[in-house]
Image (tube, rainbow, N blue to C red; front, side, top):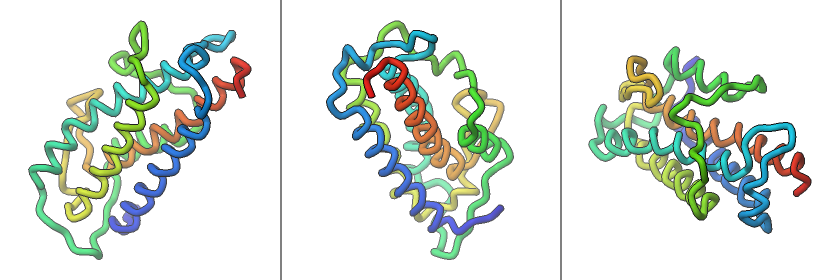
Length: 185
């Protein structure tokens, strides 16, 4: 389904700001020790979820930064439309779903999340917002990049920008569930 690229860009910017605020508000007053607690039933701690988001975002941000700074694909006018690719659309749809999905091995958090993991996550999402803004004049459907997880697969720039925001939205809910499970909220 084709959508106005300009309206999709605006909705991504709003959704990115909202998810950053949601996670920041959810974790206000939650210290590093509490963020490191894993639920008794298993699964990642809040800090590990944030580390996962950082690792996955980094794999997208670097190639997107290069594409956008190189301004590949030329400028588009304000009436341009965007359509997700088959792969990008399927990935975004799966991230919007409620079914549990295994993280690719390369996106699993290491033995210990980095210091200031919340601030580092927010820094990546702020960069995602800047890239969404900076890419506004590009044709998101024509600019292509390899999937960071499976390089044989290709997606368009709009897919990658969408996935960054949708992925953070998905894990915002997980963070809230983990805090309840470890009796923090």
